[in-house]
Each structure stands twice: as C-alpha cells, then as structure tokens.
Image 1 (tube, rainbow, N blue to C red):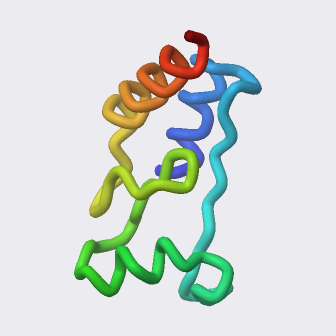
Image 2 (image 1 turned 180 degrees about the vertical axis):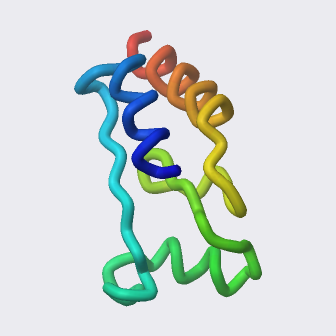
Length: 78
C-alpha cells in the first residue's frame, strides 16, 4: 500500500514530495523519537508523518495525505 501511495503522490507532485517507508520493528525507534511518542500514546501502525509530524494512524489514506500536502505546499508558497 505504501508503494501505491508513493506512486500516486509522485504522479501528482513529482519531486516536491518524498515517500519513505520505515519498518521500525526492524530498524528500531532510536532514530525516530516522534514515532516512539506516538506509539506510546497507543496509536496503531502504520503511522504517516508529514514534514516529521504525525498526521494519520491505522491505515494508508492517500486522499487525506494529498489534502495535507496541498495545504502544506499552498502555505509554503505564500
């Protein structure tokens, strides 16, 4: 599902966005303190961060991610 979202976002935004999948079960949480905090709060995998901030948990939600990216890009162009 992450690969599909990555493909969709690449088609829409080109090089303006980067999708990175990290399996913290394999690499650990040491380099991802925000993820550790979110998981301690009880939110389920997968967790989607945008610009390093947690936005969604429990599923891959491409339309919602696009909405947040659109708002972020609109805000950064002003």
